Length: 94
Image (cartoon, rainbow, N blue to C red; front, side):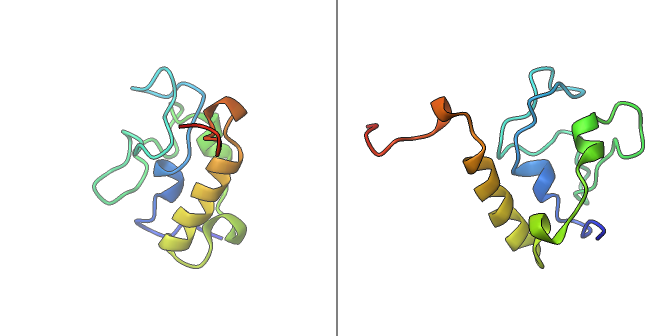
């Protein structure tokens, strides 16, 4: 599968714990990567500065679904499911 042009769900929804250019502490979930172009493409694609975590992430129907909206939903669910326990809200919080 190839990335859908303009989707960028993986560059927005997921957190990146490793440093990337311009974000030495990594990227929080829900924050667009600063390297997204206006067309929502990666300006680091194919460059040595592109983080390994990004280079190793390959589009797949299980991750991307059939639409951009599905990709955002799936990745949001995955991000929530893989958060450290200390970052999750509990029904007892609040």
